Length: 343
Image 1: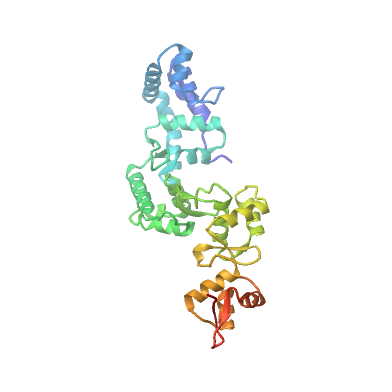
Image 2 (image 1 turned 60 degrees about the vertical axis):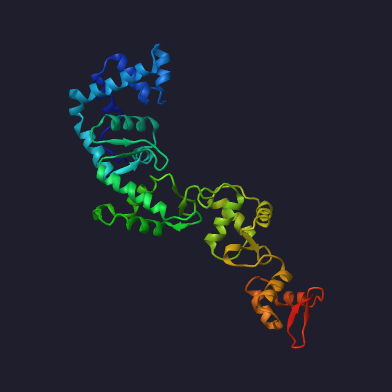
């Protein structure tokens, strides 16, 4: 079911009735409104007609002005009113491609909608810049507030931050308290957040800086980091590989995944095939290394105390820890029956 009542192609065709044949051809080529839905550049159109790209631009601008002054423009008022109401319902300011995709996935239809937006007086386009994507708005004051709020939310983000979407929405709402309640729904705020080029969402639904590997994951290690972090506790590398394949739609061979985890200091092997994140405080190294670090930190300890502390760092059997303690090359008992590090 279409979300718009009017037919975009018919509306565009009627509006172009105000143009001469040549101007109509230029507009059709420029906006992809003819049989070929590929939009042509000023230069390509100029080469077709043997004129300069600047002359093509003049024809385009003159044609748009002519349409706006024609009777056909006023006859299509309902079309522009419906488009305006749709944009307001979607948040008043919206990423261009999000708007077009919302209306139709058909490229030809999207081209005609884009043409109608260019022609219509209520619609204002802001071109993509370093901070934001191409977007359309119908309320300048609202647009300015949204842009300002997006910048404030970004400024409060740290490079390593990964924030659940619910918390991101809550943070954004803190900056738009003065807006009417009709704008404060999660779906609308998600659309506003998508305007930002500096913030992004990873496939696990967590927000952060778009430049962060936590958001723009590019390799097995980044995918694994996100998977383990989301899991929240040590997880087997086979399970990590499976989740990467399912969530990120990337082919993750089990052996390759294991090898990548071993190489990266962000991960710690804490049991047979079990990996945790270094940032969680787990000690690196094999069991004897963990025992050594514990004794260096706490001094002489009993066998029971050592087992208790090692079990918090490694998923191993108590007997494995006891066997390591019996190696005189690394550890020895003192007169009190406590273990120390061999000199």
